[in-house]
Amino acid sequence: MIRPVFEPETLPVIATGADLPPVAGERLTPDALRARFERQLAWTPEKIADAPWRNTELDPRVAAVLVPLVVRAHGLTVLLTQRADHLNDHAGQVSFPGGRQEPFDADATATALREAREEVGLDASRVEVLGALPDYLTGTGFCVSPVIALVHPPFSLEIDTLEVAEVFEVPLAFLMNPANHEERLFRYDGGERRFFAMPYPRGGQRGAETAASAAVQGGHHFIWGATAAMLRNLYRFLAA
Image (spheres, rainbow, N blue to C red):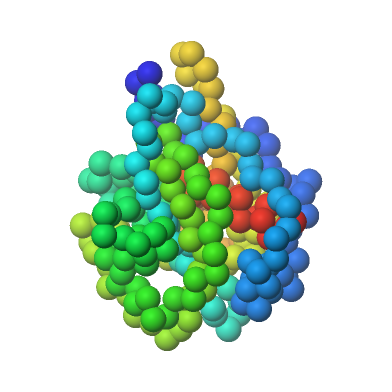
């Protein structure tokens, strides 16, 4: 099946997670995250697939991303990238630093750390790996391992402008509040696709801001698709 083209930001919101509790603040600290990854608690990943039109006859390409949780004085933030518009895969989308596994990578963690160094110049010496979430299969044919890590300041970034257009941070508490999780729907000839989105206002404005006022103040970082789905799984993992 040919992958249909659509504009995700224009599609209707059919549900939010407002009926679910946010992850409590005391669970969103470095010590609490370390303890959570050491415990074997049962939890259920989200069932929404990234896309129904993936060619299942081909083996997925193995990849990994680093989910960098930056230790800030005001609380943990998630470091995200806006991909360059000319890339073949996920052009212009909000993503975690990451990419395909190379033959010389020892494991998913090695891939994630290497890609983070190549894309944004993040030094592995500032990264404390906590663990990984279950692999995520994307509609573009990647089997992605999300490697969760703390990033300890001070650190400097050097962006590879061929791959990354922008780097920004979003409070982890915002992303771990399901009231900020949207479920959107795309209908096309032959079926439909449901996906998560987590729009975050540029400049960090949060709360009851309307779409109109957000547009005046610079719009949103539109976090959606695989990135949003992996964040939703992190929510499920931390809420268990």
